[in-house]
Length: 472
Image 1 (tube, rainbow, N blue to C red):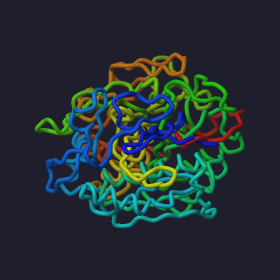
Image 2: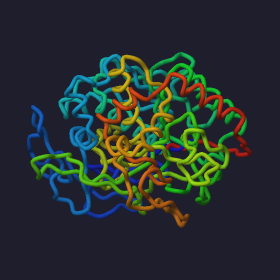
Image 3: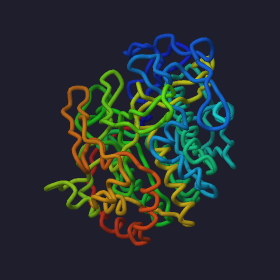
């Protein structure tokens, strides 16, 4: 079973956290262990204020410095922190492009949630939002914690892909369960039918636990997507340098699949510090460190036991022989999380939730890539070769990435990796400075990069695992 890459906390009621998923953190002033505390509401504890754009809306107390140790971000803050606002202001908003989001089960209220989220923040609804369940739609059980967790994952993925690329189409492809074979079948349907330009996968498991019969099939599917110039993203996991073992009884040092596949761009996690609404420049980028919150999770990263070092990573890791993760990162902190509207009553009361985890990064990187595709006028497809060219050229790297050099992704007693200048196994090259990065990707991505990566990775896997995927 694959786990969602998100951590969750409710902003309006008490809920339990999910140790293996993205975190929805209640906006209380104390950290969550296993049970959330009563938190923000949309009433007295919110504050009326105007954002920098045109309309006014309520701000939560975590946006105005009233919750010590907790800071939360709306779409305008995140856009500003990573520079996407400048692209959108220039008309580069993902128009004409389609983001495919792969998830499991369903969220019966995702249409309502997306509409409410858009109405709250004054966002246009996506030009087209489509849900496809190739194996049939699994009936939703509000008492099933696994289904509820995946439903929250869907809320995060859809709302935040849309927040960053507001004019892109979104296709949500739903597997009938979170078993490996079902996730694979749903993703393959999206690839076979070329449903979009970019694919986001916010789930994973220890690479050794993937059903061994599926590993070569999954890689072949990713090769087909690459040949169709579809860009693939996956979150790197929420357990730092560790992953739960195959029977979920303990943590082991491991990396996550599908992020580990060399044809996929793996997205790790950071803790973003950006200005709140008490300043004149809300969302202004201040600093980042490795995401590592012991009560919630840490950014996934490390080295594969199954995939050898791809050619684009040669020279990145001194003496490296194996595929290293992540390639890039994005804000994943729970106590510095993103605001997401969820309505799964009676399982989860309707309200805004503070969400973190590497699940937040994969759909937002997919959205930035959709914007790049729009600006280029053609799909970039495989981007890892170009990302590493950019990362190894100091002027380009400094312009395109926020290099994270502080922190470590040790988790659950498993030693981690230190952040350092340049690429590292905690945050990759870091988080995006979107305007410069988009222009350099357009300039440096070559149509032959994907074919070369496919050829170089052929036959270089060895898998003896067995297990199921979990949402991160």
